[in-house]
Structures are given as C-alpha cells and as structure tokens.
Length: 277
Length: 298
Image (cartoon, rainbow over the protein chains, first blue to last red):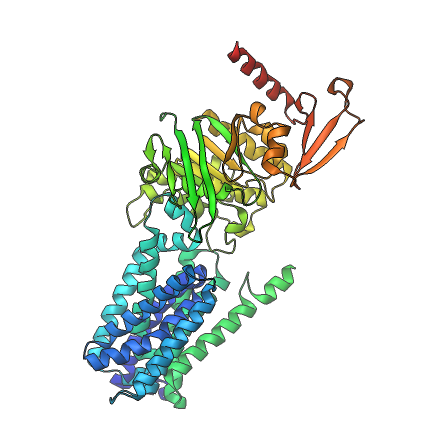
C-alpha cells in the first residue's frame, strides 16, 4: 500500500494530478458535444494544425497558446471555406488541411533553434510541468469549462437541431464558432498534459464512454467527466510506477474503460444488445 | 387569443451559389386558420420555399412577409415553428421527450435557458395535447414513428408558433397515427394557425388540407383544395412522374359513372371520379365542408 502511495509525496506528481484533473474534465465536457455533433475528426484536425502556430509564436516571442489558438481556428475556418466553395467533401478537406498544416509545423520546427522538445509537444510532459504553466492551465481550463457548462443547452441545441435554433432566431453561427473556439482553446490547454496526438483521445473517448452508459445529456456530462478524471489519475500513477509515457498511460486506461463499456454497458453495451435481440 | 397570422410570399426567386435557380417568381398568400398542402415533385423547390419562409435562404428577388413583417422579425417573435423530417433527426441523441419539447421554449428563456414555471407548464400542456405526457422521460429513439412526430409537434406547440411548417409528416407513420396527427392539425387550424404541409402523400391531401399550393420551380396554382387539386393541375405539376391507372369498369357505384382514375406517387393513391375525389375516410365532414362552402358562395 505504501508503495502505491509513494508518488503522492512528490510535489511534481501532485501538480500533475491537479492539472490532469482539470484538463480531463474540460476535454470530457467538450467531447460530449463533439461526438454528438459529428465533429470527432475536427478535434483531430485542429490538434494537429496548432503545431505551426506554436512554432511561429515561439519565433515571434508571443505566448504559445495564442499562436496555437489562431492556427487551430484557421484550420477549422479554412476547412469550412473550401468545403463551401468546392466539390470536395468536408472530411476530405479536413484531412488535406490538417496534415498540410502539421507538416508545415514540423518543417518550421526543425528549422528553428529552440529548447522545446518535439516529443513534449507531441505526447505531452505532464510530470515536468512548470509552475507558471500550472496557473495558465488552471485559469484557461476553468474558463473553457465554465463557458461550456453555462451555455450547454444552446450548444446541445445546435448539435441536435440547428434549424430549430435558427427558427427561434438564436445565434446559431455564433454558437458554432464559439464551440470551435472552445475546442481550439481546450487543445491549447491540454498540450502540456497529453500533447497534440493524444489530446484527440481526450476529446473523443470520454464522451463515447458516457454515450454508451446513459440516455440523458446531463448524466452523460457527469459520466464523461468521471471517466476522464478517473483514467487520468490512474494513468499518472501507473506511469510513475512502470516508467512509461504519462500521456500514453492516461489514454490507454481511457481506452480500456471504453472497451469495457462497449461490452458491458447496461443498455447500449454489445452483450446487452445481443441479449435483447 | 392572439390575432390571426398572415403569410405572404411575393415573387420570390431563389438561386443557389452554383447558379442553380431553385425557385422563380413564386407567389401565394395564406391567412390564419388553414391547413395548406405544398405539393410538387422532388426538386420542384418545396424545401427551398420552406427554407425561405424559415429565413435560411435569402431570396434573390421578392420577399416573404409574415404578419406584414420580414421573416427575420417574425423569427424573433418565435412565430415560425417547424417539424423536421424523421430522417433529419439523430434518434440516438441523449435527449428525452421532455427535453425536445422544452427546446421550443429556448427562445423565450434567458441566455442560461433555465426553465421557469411558465415554460414547464407550457411544455406539459403541449405534451398532454399530443398525448405524449406519459412518455415524457423516454429517450426519443425509443418511440414509434408516430410518437416521434408528435414530440416535434409538441415542440412547435410549446414554442407557440403561429406559422407551423411540417416536412413530410406522414412518412414512416401508420394510418392510425396519421389520423391522430390530422385531428391535431385541425385543432390548430381552429386556433387560427397557418399550417403548411409539404407532402408526397397525395391521397390524404383532399382529406385534411383546405388549401393547396402546387409548385414546380414556381407556384403553378394555389387556392382552395377543391379548385386547385384537380387532375389537370396535378398532371401539370407532376408531368409524367405520377403513376396512372385507368379503370373503365370498376366496382364503384353507379352514380360515380363507373370510371375512376388513380394517381399515385408511391404513397396513398389519389382517386378521381366524375365529380372529383372519391376516397374520404371522413366523408361526412367533407360533405359538410362542401355544403358550407356552397353556402358561402351564395
């Protein structure tokens, strides 16, 4: 038992647990909207597209978060523009745009002298998080979480039935861009914890797990947050003990939870569905 | 009771970004207290017309006015409600019957959308009216086709819409539910609503719609069902698309002249006899309507 508790005596582990919890909760809440709106790939695209923004911000000497945010929005908006003005389907456009931006970021990165580590950007380095970053993460994470929860009913409506939002003169375009901005911001906030590649999992898996367990949206939010924070804490502790990549351990625990839910969830699990059919 | 709504579509032309002209010079007017069918083939501009009434597309020329105001102003007053086609809805979505009906109230709530007592009362009243109150906690995917329709109808009621648009309300719905929906629409007509129904189901049109708008890229004809919904007009609207069968000698009674013609586009057929439509489930009501009409004329 003592051996299990050992990591908790270190300040850097406690910091990681705190930051991990906030990032997990924020991503989990957003993931519920993304999977219902059919935007899972959007999380993937935006998270890769932020790389050139980060490098350019580093070169320009402005906060990396701002560069990442602008690049993420650029990816989403240009995808929408190309889709509307060509015959290419949206998922295809997205695939072209985000891989292009990611590649551009990689080239920029290798041509730039810096003390940044590419693997920290790609898979995160939550155990090495600095104090200044902790506050930034907590503040931004709190804002994203707060805004998303406060406007959850409107955001849910534009996922479920955007036409109804328009017919009642609700600002559906604004809400779409708001969701997109929250997504970009969430990715920026999560970079330090889990990195570009694994943030996709944080933005898709918790919502999917929760969707298997419940038919109520408010409960879905709760289950997603519980699943995400639970797997983050477990993942951090496991990674300490086995000395493996923290981000990867978090995602792996989450994926296991998804597989278990897929099989055993009370109503929508595969076993239950088979039994009913 | 609020005053009767008016819907005026004046010389509306709509072109899409690719240059395709979906609708040109479409005009018609409807006053409160009507169930009007919007009939036309696929691609005739039915959904474009719906979209311009809902303010989703901006006409290139002409205007849509509701109560004399532009659409945008009417939407702000939540006058327009719509019931989507079943295929447009994600039935796996984690929302209950209650949640969907409550969405109709969002426009009237503050920005946090926390339901007040009046919103809850309105939702309950609407759900009871469509007999869905007992199902209020069901997830929407666990309903039958007709119940699904009724939930969205309840949302329109909860919203308090005066111009209600229904897109193909009878697709995937059994006959019994179809009748139940028609009863409800008649009640709304009595309340003074304008109900515009886009439908393929030609057979049911004369039964519950008092007016018809026939469209094919423009409004071909509109007015009272008995005047507009004729074999000639329908042939013009549909061209060769409708199936036609002619029975020279049938089992129809003597007074119908023993000749019937059947027009259908894969749903309930529309049956014409010598004096117009033959098939009515509710003949008595129809005859009463005809009698009233002729009295009005005199």
